[in-house]
Length: 436
Image 1 (tube, rainbow, N blue to C red):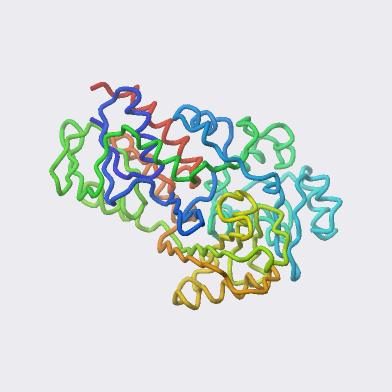
Image 2 (spheres, one colour):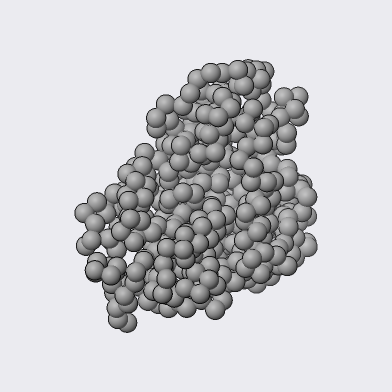
């Protein structure tokens, strides 16, 4: 028997592939639903995502989607999704989509453009533990960090590039430098060969993914695992409903939850509890379309920290997927908090919603109050791959030798796409290593 603890996308993927390969598997989920942070909600006439809004897929992820039977339910975004906006000097500016157009645009200063031109000729190498901000400042310039790297890292990872470690956050880009001596040369030579990446959702939202993975999977909801006990044959998994013997256990839970499960069997478990999960608030706002002056012709707008705005940015959800709200309205998904905006999440609900609405009105020339707002608070959102994550990663790697396998977004990639790939790979590994 293989026990999977946690019913988010990681645990569901491991369980799904083990089950389809005929392995005896049992998944335990503490809450009354599967999916973890992936939650699609239909409220009034609005379909909103409380967690990940889309899936950034390469060839491997597209293959997984086909294998689990969801290829026919893919919902691609409108073509405007290629347009990305960054707030700079008082207004949104469209970020050019390719290097040549970037060099010819007015988005970056002459100095920053020269830094881009010089990057392939730089011979420096990343020191141990270099931060994301340090890496890009060294290879390019501080302006590139401030107006490209910072808003991207804040908007996508809720992180601070000054604290995130390059080797764990963007290992493939670091590999470009090591193998090709340059990020630009590495990208031009084809990078990792994983194929063109594109974003998409599903007809009923992202929760279609986790619902499909959970189909026919032996799982127990409302069943928290209380502790683990080591046995001669493997592990004993204790729940309020009883104990289950397992040869292997998959920890598909947040690092802080894994720390409590391992407290009685691993003296270094506290290393996992030290991982940072900054709080994040997701605000959904709906406006009458004719009250919004901005064209909203893109994926969304990100906010560099140096611009001192209230939110990290917004996804223009109805521009990407028009079926998410009625045609005469627009739906915006705004992110407040994360590693660089922690203090903002301490505001009371009413003040946080009011400040978000005031900022949106200013940024998008909105002349009426929102028709509808919804606030979702994630007290512990996205794990940060900072210096404290190093010891946690080392411990996770060692646990596998004891039949405890980590498959979660705090190790080896935070995105839903990363979790799908890690989950399938681990399932194949366990299927080869075990027989029932």
